[in-house]
Length: 89
Image (cartoon, one colour):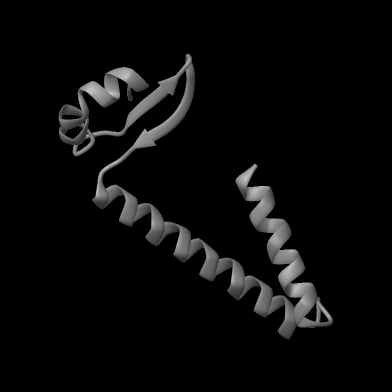
């Protein structure tokens, strides 16, 4: 992944838009990563994957509820929150 500093990205924004059609471009500010620019198509793909993953996790929670491994819906959502937080770390 190509990385630019924020000043370069600002100055070369048109080029950045062309580059992200092929691969993400990282942007650093003060030497630290602050953003990654991706194409609209890649963004939609990531959102679709996230939605699919969430549906699978919700289904797991519902199966746990039906199987009696969880006593109430609140517990399902609490366990789901834990799974989501652990996946984000």
